[in-house]
Length: 233
Image (cartoon, rainbow, N blue to C red; front, side, top):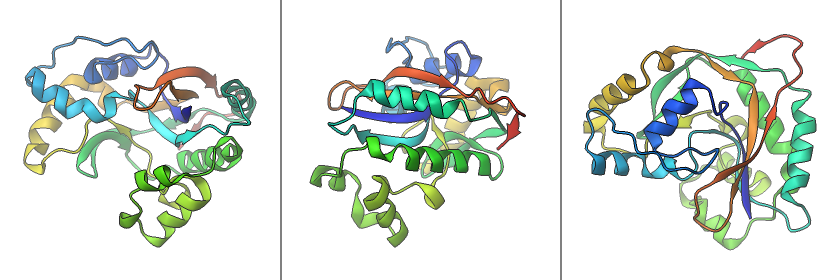
C-alpha cells in the first residue's frame, strides 16, 4: 500500500468545494463531480487537470511512499494524531502561481512554518516508509536530480524535502506557456475571492492508494489542537 501525509482543507471549506469542482473529484469520498468550467471545453479541461485529479486537492508534506510491511495504516494514523496534538494551526497567505509549468496554490511569501512542519513530518514518520526499490528509484527520475535532491531521495524517499521543499497545491498538470495567461484567467474566475484569502492550515490527512495507479483516498484526518497561539507561516 502507498500512502502520503498531506494538508487538505476540511470537506466543507469553500476552497475544498471549489477545488473539487475544478478537479472534478472529491478526495474525501472519491466521488466524481460533473461541473462545467466557464471558458474551457470538456476535453481541454480533462487534459489540463488529469495529473492532479488522481490525488485531489492537497499539499504534500510527506509525499507518497510504500508503507513498511511491519506497520499498519492504523498505526500511522494513531501516531499522526498524537503528533498533531502538539501542532498549532498556521495562517498562510496564498496565491495562484506558476510552478514548473503548472498552476498551483502557493504561499505569497517565504513560509518557514510550513517548511518546518514538512521537515518534522518527513523525518518523524520515516520509520513507516518501506525501503526504496528499483522501481521507486526509476520513478524518482534520478538523472534530473542535483546532488542534494539525490541525497534526499536516498535518505528520506523523496528528492524534494527539507531544504528542497516547496509547498504547493496543484491545480493543473504541465501546460504550454503559450496557454499560461488564458488558463490563469480561467482559474482566477473559477476560484474568485478564494484565491486571495489566507489558507488555514489546521489539519493533515493520511491519503492511501488502494491499489497501484488507483486514485488516492483520504483514510483519516488529524487536527492541529495545540491552540497556544495561531501562527503565521
